[in-house]
Length: 105
Image (cartoon, rainbow, N blue to C red; front, side):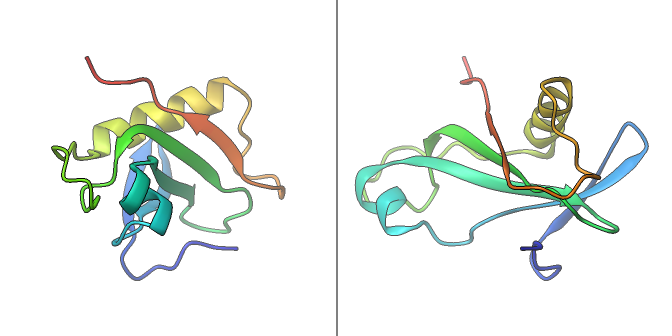
């Protein structure tokens, strides 16, 4: 399933344009239990495979009330590069490629 264009952002990594998004509202498990925040990335043109990024911190709108850590375009860029080095092929049709972002220090 493709990422909706409305609400997604574009990013260029190594001369290739991608679109990425984070849910505007947390899922129930993210809000109630503080599960990891996730983002989705795909090619901007002719999307095939989706990159699913898991961030080891809570969604900004978590009901638990812990401090929010924003996801920046720089975080997304580093995740795209990491996923590509681990074998994500965005131009080949397939299931979601799961990638875990390293925790901020």
